[in-house]
Amino acid sequence: MNVNWLIEQAIEARQKAYVPYSSFQVGAALLTENDKLYLGCNIENASYGLTNCAERTAIFKAVSEGENRVKAIAIVGDTEGPISPCGACRQVIAEFSDDNTKIILANLNGDFVETTINELLPGFFSKKDLIK
Ligand SMILES: O=c1ccn([C@H]2C[C@H](O)[C@@H](CO)O2)c(=O)[nH]1
Ligand SMILES: [Zn+2]
Image (cartoon, rainbow, N blue to C red; front, side, top):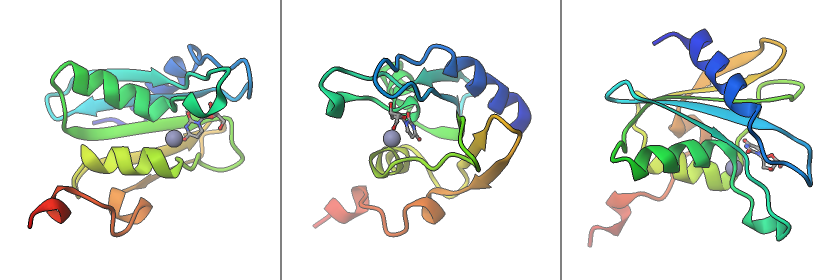
C-alpha cells in the first residue's frame, strides 16, 4: 500500500466536496482488506448538523457494498498541519478498523502522519463492550 498514492486519491475525492456553508473541502480515500478503493467527500446540509464528513462518506460507501474492513484510510483537508478527524468519525472508523489499520492524516502542503485508531480514540466503545 502506497501512502502517497492514497493521499493523492483523497485529494481527488476532495474536489467533489459539497460545502456551501463552510467552504472547507475534505477528501478521504479508503482501501479495504480486499484492496478495493472507496472515495468520499464531506457533504453539508442547510440543517448544519446533518453534515456527513468525508471519511464517513467513504466508509459508508464501502460498507454498503459489503466491504467492512479498512486496511488504510487517508483524509485530507487544507489545514495547517495534518487534518484531525472529529469525534464522530473516530468512533465510526473504530467500528471497521483494527490495530493494523493505517490511518493517514494529511494536508495539501505534503504534511502527513500515520496513526492508529487506538491513538485517535483510546478506549473506544466497541462490540466487545456489548457482550454480557
Ligand atoms: O476530518 C474532517 C473534519 C471536518 N470535515 C468537514 C465537516 C464540515 O463539512 C467541514 C467543516 O467542519 O469539514 C470532514 O469532512 N472531515
Ligand atoms: Zn467527522
